[in-house]
Every structure is written in C-alpha cells, then in structure tokens.
Amino acid sequence: MIGPRRQLALMVLDIGAPIGLYYGLRGAGLSNLVALSAGAIVPAVGVIIQLITRRRLDGVGGVVVVSVAATIMLSLITDSARFLLARDGFITALWGLWFLATLRARWARRPAAYALARPLMEGRRALGLASWEQLWADQATFRRIWRVSTVIWGAGLLADAVLRVLMSYTLPVSVVPGLGGALWPVTFAAIQVVTNVYYHRAGLYRLLGAPWADNRLARPRRAGSLSG
Image 1 (cartoon, rainbow, N blue to C red):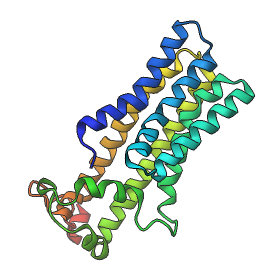
Image 2: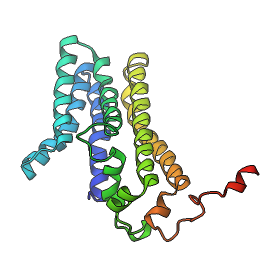
Image 3: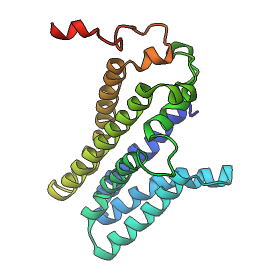
C-alpha cells in the first residue's frame, strides 16, 4: 500500500508539476503547444522511474505512457493546443468507462470500487475484521453496495471528463491548466462524500463489523412500520 508521503509526491508530480511547468515555459515566451507538450510528458516520468527501479511496468503505467505519446503526436500533427488540453478529459473518460465495464466484463472478477477499496480497508480493526470474500459470497447487500459505488465512481469520472473537454474548447487556453488542476481534488472529494454517505446508509460498515457502526442503519423495517 502506498504511504501518505508517496501519495503526496505522486500528486505533486502528476498534477502540480505539469501546471507549474506550463506557466513557467509560457512566461519564458514559449508557445502554448510547446508548453503543454512539455507538461504532458511529466506524468510519464514516474512510470519511467518505476520501470527503471522495479524493472516492471503495470497496466496503468502502460496506459499513461501510451496516452501521453499518442496525445502529443496527434497534437503536433493537428497543431492544436486545445486537443492537448483535452487530454486529461479523454483519459478520465477512459477510467470512467473502465469502472462501468467491470460490472459486466468477464475479465473483471469484482467491480472496480471493490477491487480498489479492498486493499485499503479490509483487515483494519476500526473498519471491521470480516472477510470480504465471505461477505461477497454470502451477502447480496454487500455485492450490491460495491456495484452501486462502482456506478457512482464511473458516472462521477465521466462527468468530470465532459467538464474538462468543455473547458478545453471554450475557455482561454491559459486558464485551463490551472482550473483543470483545481478540478481534480473537487471531483474526488465530491465522489468520496457521495460514496461514504451511501456506504453508511446502505450499511456497509455494519456488514464489515465496524465497532462504531450503527446497527440500525441497515436493519430491515417491520411490515407494520410501512403504514406509518
């Protein structure tokens, strides 16, 4: 599991560095296309470092390298800075579609939200020590929670992608890099809030056995209570 310091370093590298590099190069008099191309290369740097130090490249890293190379090449061919600006939107859309694809695809054993959350949450005493595999096999509610949260993440990322593409083609070029960087924490915070509210209301933490969970949240109502 990636520690907080490394997470912060990766966030600065992938989000902050391209923005700073773009505005620095623009201040030095370089064109929008050159400055954006230089900034687009930065996310691939971490992947290359991983390849050198660990001598392996995971699927996510491969997608990053290919997308960076393809976007820069197409931008240079079309001579379009706005296409390069929209790159983040296109990549975010791919992630959103991937989330939704894991709900049905045969290659996905579990929904994406489950696969990403399990290493971070399972086995932590504060969140409950129940076996996720056992819950998945026995509890239809548990399976539904992760399918719904996967839809929430997929829809949220697609909405973010649409907004990024719209910004790229409607706002002044110089405004988009900074605004796009600010949009990342807003998007992820909004999705996290929505999913955590849903987890509480659906009774996820009760199912996991969290000691602080309110057992009343997912308790079935008696038939008589429906009449008010």
